[in-house]
Length: 214
Length: 96
Figure 1 (cartoon, rainbow over the protein chains, first blue to last red):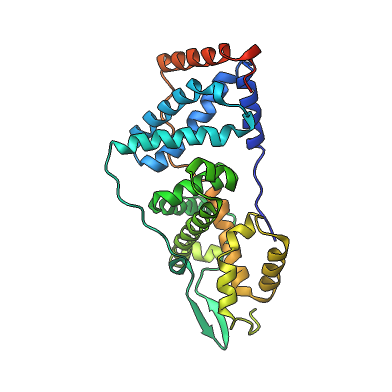
Figure 2: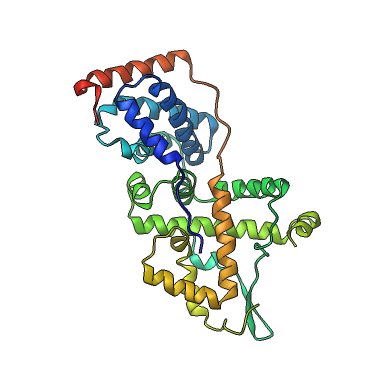
């Protein structure tokens, strides 16, 4: 039943890293363009401020090129760059005050169940018949954005590295300096929290969207 | 529709904790078999899995924010100098 697979973009990034370390023409420009964007998105999620993220992304790129001769395996380019980005974010955050992380519990993310005629039902929206309309998709993406921004940082960084950047569990664990089990736990709770927010939206959405969904 | 099989909430709870690993194909085959056996008999859990799968699809397209403008020429030039230095510091231009 439908597992999720990584995209070809990961292989292209590894190939770009090979070209970069081999000094091939054009590789530098393409690498800067692509990885500046990735590091900026990561930094923005962690730092929360556009200016800080821009500065961190720039600092991280300098570190990447300062340390490029330490990149022994181009196929590890993504965890290697994100590790540098994470350290750049931590350096930035040391200069500012931040709140302690809040843990999400599995219990708070489980849907409520009710008994109906002897049968157990979950109090969730009907996701199976959601239309693929552009308008609904755009609206859901807006809700996803809000939900992710509200997540404690330890969850949103895992979500970004795993679901948006497509890093493996092992690579994400390496970037964040935690165990693979911790990555799995945080990823699941992050997804559940976003799902819960989306579900709440779908159940209370305007009539026009509900009609489209039914 | 549900067929009266949803009284085993503990099993649903156990499955609930594994659904992301199931979607990511990170579970052993026997655990997948257990989950699929449960899902085939538990429409609420199957429905929940579908909602989680669609959530992950939406998360994959998420972008935290708009990119800033292009790098300044000075920064780009400094980065290129570091890059060329790194290349010179490697044997035959192939640091791998």
